[in-house]
Image 1 (tube, rainbow, N blue to C red):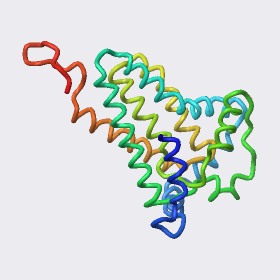
Image 2 (cartoon, rainbow, N blue to C red; image 1 turned 180 degrees about the vertical axis):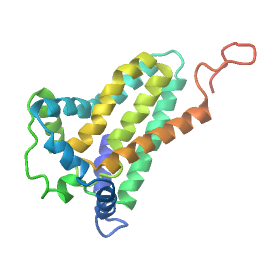
Image 3 (cartoon, one colour; image 1 turned 90 degrees about the horizontal axis):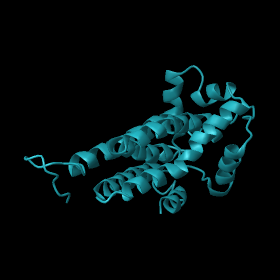
Image 4 (tube, rainbow, N blue to C red; image 1 turned 30 degrees about the vertical axis):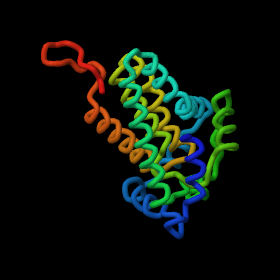
Length: 224
């Protein structure tokens, strides 16, 4: 559902706005950085760096399956329902932003400064290129829905399966850097994705409690 909606929303980019809004983000990043982060990271590129970045970027497509699968395997499905609720909320916020503030991303707006190819080889480079070629969309850059979804999954992994959360953290960090390195997102998109992933996750956990809540006598309370 999320994949289909992501692609369909891109066709509504100019439903409410009459053009791309990237100039706001470009102005912000020009004020913060002397060189756009996506250009700066690209200049440090190497086949090894690209390989690591794309391991992280590709991990987005399995992070939710891993965390959701682990939580669903528990007898108490409360944690699984929470991660589902937070994921849906974060994507809905992203989809609304795509329509209200359409951006096409640095691959288009900074193309003149990306006057060099990113070196890349290996299976993950091939997989990412395959996905982008067949399922990539023009638009939907701000905020990064990939980062938002990954952050939700990571937060719930840390909350309910800390060992899993620890093991997935490097992948999410690589995902954040890879989204900028691969020219899919501005740094602003990534920061916004982190916030949009974290806020619904925190709100859902605060509103719904946890599966290990206890009553006043220390006994496990039933989840509702």
